[in-house]
Each structure stands twice: as structure tokens, then as C-alpha cells.
Image (cartoon, rainbow, N blue to C red; front, side):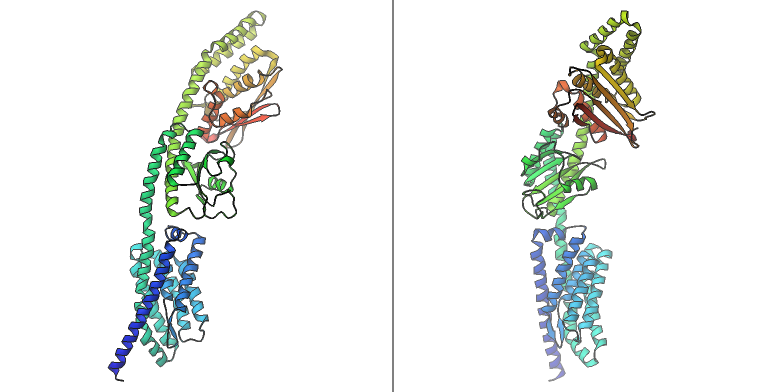
Amino acid sequence: MTKLEAWALSGHYTGIILLQLFERAALLLICLFLLSKLPHFRQIFQKEVLDTKDRIILSVIFSGFAILGTYTGINVEGSLVNVRIIAVVSGGILFGWPVGLITGVVSGLHRYLIDIDGVTSVPCLITSIIAGILSGYIHSRISRKRRWIVGIIAGMTCEALTMLLILLMNPVEIGREIVSIIALPMILGEVSVGLIVLFVQGVEGERENIAARQAKLALDIANKTLPYFRSINSDSLRKICTIIRGDIQADAVAITDTRFILAYVGIGEERYNIGNEIITDATKQAISSGEIVIINDDTEGKVPNIQSLIIIPLKEKGIVTGALKIYYSKAYKITYSLQTLAVGLSQIISTLMEVSRIEQMKEMANKAEIKALQTSINPHFLFNALNAIASSIRIDPDNAREMIINLSGYLRHSLEWSDQLIDINKELGQVVNYVEIEKARFGSKLTVIYDIDEEVEVKIPSLIIQPLVENAIVHGILKGRGSGTVTLSVKDRGEQVEIIVEDTGTGIEDEIIQKVYTSQMPENRIGLSNVHQRVKLIYGEGLHIQRLDKGTRIQFKIKKERL
């Protein structure tokens, strides 16, 4: 055979090997395509930030591809022409050095162990590990647009290094013979790295289109729910959840504050009554951490009949005020698309709820002002107070004079009502004026104990304590037949001031407590509900109302940073 004939035969053989190599690379690409159609893997491909679990899954996938590439390699003079390096470089460039390095080490060791004495086993081990490190460096240092072309160059460089090591680590004749046959197809085959990188980047690139579509859907939902944010209550929140559930085709949707369920619509609705405390650990975790919680395969059945759920904290001014929860009865329904929508929707809901709270604060302030003015000119209250004064003028002039002073101070404070925060001592003075008038009327039937820390310095909303004391006297003590005691406690707790109003009266009904919490009190009894809403809107947490064995205990805390 002449040299020309040998060269032609060698070229023909090289072409066949290159064609077979591209066939195996195409098989790898097809496998990636099929994986990208599975929701769980597509979600991983589209993530901007991978967690440890994602990296482990991707490392297993690309290690499997690399090992499969070894087993499907073409045997040439004791060496294997394969797509192992293509899998290693692609994995590292696309998903970072952990995936690249693990894939390189695993596939390199496998290649070495299946043919320990082979002429190319050690060079393949070395270059597989180098390919993993190099591809990870490219992922972190090279811009996304240029990774495909840099990936091709890196793959070719690694294969060229493999050829060099084969020449250096084997007898000259054997090394030359092997390299002369496999070098060109192995190096040219690395073009497949660019194709794989471009394909997966195309799947990742769908994020922008998804984000645009989901942003439009979020705005559509916001437009539908906007009328119900004008007055936030259990009914309006339920309608908001119903709209969200219908538009995103969820099996259940819920909204909570930091402690209680505010609205729940869908599967399991009968178990989650409005006003019930939050019971799932996932919700508590999302609220405490301020991070989104996703469960895509709830095999333990923590929520009955629910397999997938996403819980997004609702924030106002950076502070978590509640959560939006979306449930599905089937596993792996929380896709990247839904996450994008849920995050956008939660941001819109948070903004709307914050605006609504501001409007509610103004409304509550107006109601409080009306209440104050009504109290100040209430004929029944004035007539009783004046009658008590009149009856004391002859019998006990000093007592009558004190009652006039108390009534004067009480009326002055009511008429000077302001929506600005006032010193707590001014509010306590109003309480004392009111109590002294009532004590003068009812004598020994009413006892009031003040347990107030000295030098408490904090500003509070006007008419926030007096209505609670009034409620304790009128609806607690005076409803009973005998005498009773009201205790007002103001305690400095470091960063907060704790205020407690406790009475030994008839006790508040559980139904009334629920109506206060859910803003369903009738308009003619807004005092207690008004205080609860104002405290909740200003400080994030309202009144804690507790029915005692004998009487009622109402407690709330004021943050000192409000000074």
C-alpha cells in the first residue's frame, strides 16, 4: 500500500469516527431535550441560583452522561473515542464548578477503573478532572453570551492535552498510532459542547418570556382584586383568594397575618376557619425567616390532600406582616413559572395591603374622633355626671369640686383629640378623670387599681387606653350585680411598654372576641374593635383579649421606637 493510499484510508477512517462521535453527542443532546420537558428538571434548568440539592441532581445527571459516553465509546487501538469530556465541560460551564468537578472526578475515575492498564486510562483521568475545573472557571468568569464558544475552545484544549499525555506516557510508536487516528475526531467533536450550552441556555432564556407573561397575569389579578382592598376584612380577603385561585388554577389559596388565618378558599376549607391560629410549620418558617418556602412533594402529608405548596411572605416596609399560600393536590406543581407569578403577586398584594392599612388608619382615626366627640357631648353621660355633682354639692362640696375638675379635664382632652401620638401620661390623665367621675356615681360598686411603673416614657395614639377602661367598667363591672375591680397595669418591658386592662366583671363572650378580631363589630359598638384595629395597624399586632374565670383581660404592647 502506498503512502497516499494509507493517508486516504486513514482520512476515511477518521471521518467515520467523527461521524459516530457526533451521533453520540446528538444522543446526549436528545437526552437533555427530554429532561427539559419534565417540569421538575425544567425548573432546575431555569433557576438563577442553584441550591445544594439541585447541584447534586445535576452532578448525577452529567456524571451519568459522561459514564454513558465512556460505555458507548469507539474502541481504537486500545483507546476509547467518546463524549465524556463533552459532558464534563458542558455540565461545568452551564451549572458551575461543583457540577463540573464532580462530573470530571466521577467519570475520570470510572474511565480509569474499567481499564486500569489501558494506554489512555491515566491521561483520560487527568484531563477529565482538569476539564471539570476549567469549565467551572469559565462559568464564573465568562459572560453568558460567550460561554458556548469558550466552551468549544476549552473542550478542544482538554482533548489536545489528552493527546499530548498519550504521547508522553506511552511508547512513541503506540502513542503516535493512537493519536494519529483519534486526535482529529476527538478535538473536532468538542463542537458539540457549544450546541449543548446553547440549547440549555435557550431553556434558561425562557425565564424572561415567562416573567413577562406572569407579570401581566399578576397585574390582571391585581386589577380584579383592587376593589376588595379598599376595605380589608374577612369577606374581602376571601374574595381576593377566590380570584387568585381561579386565575392560577390552584386547588387552595390562603392569606394569613403573622398569627392567624385571615382567609382560606379551596380544598380543606372546612379545617381552616377564619381566626384560627396558624398550625403548619412551613407557614411559621416563611413568616419567621421572611423567605419563600416551597414543598413540591409533600409525601408526609403535612397538609391533607395537598402535595405541592408555595408560601410567600407578605412584607410592608421590609417587615413580614403575613403570608400568601398557594396549594395544589398534585406533586411538582410549583414550577418556575408559578414562582415568578407568586412573587410578583405577593409584592402587589403587600403594596395594596399597605395602602389599604393607611386608609384604614385614617378611617379608624376619624371614627375615634367621632367617638370622642360623641362621648364629650353625650347627654346621658353628661346628665349622670352633672346629677352626681349636684347631689354632692350640699353633702360633700369638696367631692363635688373634684368631680367638676375631673369632668372639665375629661371634656378638654376629648375636644382636643388629635391623630398625632401623645405622651402616655396625658392619656393616663384622661383615664383618671373618667374613672373618678364613674367612681363618684357608683361608689363602692367600682374599685380601680393602678399598677403603673414610674417614669414610663412612650408616645401612644390618643384614646387608646380610656376606651378599654370604659369597656371594662360599662360592659364588665356594671353588668354584674355586685361590686367589681378594674386593674390598669402599665409596665416597662425594655424595648416595649406592656399595657393590661383587667376586670372582675361578667366576662367577655367568645363571639365578641371573634368579631373584634375579624372586624365584624356593629357600628354602635366600635370602641373595643376600633382600639384593636388602630393598635394592629400602627404596631403590627392588635389586642390580646382573654376571657378569665371571672372577668376579662385585655393586653397590648407599644414599641418604644415609636417615640
